[in-house]
Image 1 (cartoon, rainbow, N blue to C red):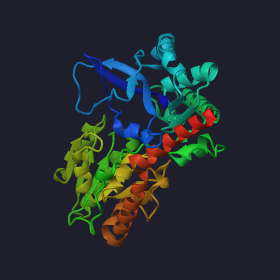
Image 2 (image 1 turned 90 degrees about the horizontal axis):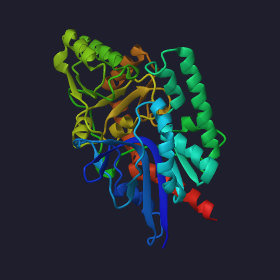
Image 3 (image 1 turned 180 degrees about the horizontal axis):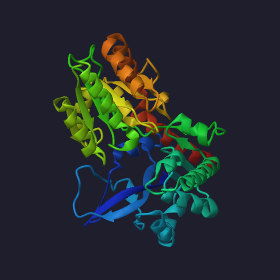
Image 4 (image 1 turned 120 degrees about the vertical axis):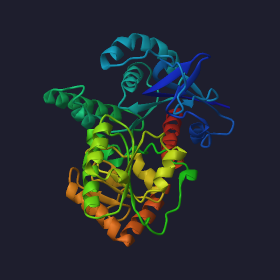
Amino acid sequence: MRQMNILIAADYLYYYTVGDQWYCEIPWDDDFARLFLDRMDPTDKLRVFLIGRQRLASCVKASWHLVSHQYYEVIRTPDWSSPTSWLFSLPCFYRRVIPFLTKSDVVLLKLFYLNSLAIFLINKILYRRPTVTLLVGDSAHAALLREDLFPNAPIRSFVSWVVTLLIKWIQSSVGIPGFVAEFLREKYASHRSDATIANESWLQEHMFQPPRDRMSSRPTILFVGRLIERKRVHMLIDVLIELLQDGRDLQVIIVGDGPLRSALENKVHFSGYETHFQFAGWIQPLSSDLLHYYRRSDILCLPSFAEGLPLVLLEAMANGVAVIATDVSGIPEVVKHEDTGILVPRDNAIALKHAITRLLDEPWLWHKCVVNAYTLAHEHTYAKQRGKLAQAILDVLECERQ
């Protein structure tokens, strides 16, 4: 009998309460543990050490998940609120994590997080534990959009360049590099044929609903996401108002919250079509409430300026919704034009309107996209996608033991 110890580093927030109960918005539960246990010898044991940020909570929110003590242990490290405070916390961080790093068999780094960067450097210099990574988004491109952090464009470009170099260095140095989409591997580690492509889907089989044969008599258009500028929700609403002005009888549901919500609600109010729109607010991901909105919708529109691989597309596909999305980043890897959905150029309101009109007027195309997307979604379940990452971790450990 052997025990496998995995150390997972990210910047996730872990909340604790009196009695040392830990909570996280990520469910560290039996489902995740079984990804490994089902691939291990039945007599072997599993322990997972979790590195993130900790914060005392006065109450427990409904969206938080209790961290299971059976398989997981949260490492107490300093909390921080900015890159500067993170730097000052590093000496204490180092002292806290060393005892766990030394007894870990393998390390999983979620990129691009500051705690992961620290663990990578410590491990590379001192301990050289076998390492697997997962790059969860295009961090270098994201730096170019962070005017809130770096108002100066040349500074944003410099930060993006530095982040690019760091990601390429890390992904060329680890045992198995991982990416949530193929376009990220091509950008940051095109030379690594051994890379793992595994998105972070939460889809379980019970969350699927087979497609309907036809669209609703009064079609429902759905948006799910943060109400921020780069999601281009304002452009979508403008297009939908135009369609209503053209005589289309549509229902629109906007799921999500964010800084643009008030402005978007005002836009709808003054359009004269307020009764056609519903702002549902934030809804817990893949809750029964969110599944309800998917299942009453006909078309999901995601006209984002920039994305990684949006999981809402897969969630919609799993519930019989046709998808329209921007032809950027990892989206074309799941949305095949006129096959599993419709792709449109970013910031092109005319193309977006045309795509919606096509699905409304061509029921055969809507049905084809829905059926093919439903089949594709079955390849992107929690078990299959995260299972690939679990297998990569076991493979790199087995290679080390040989």
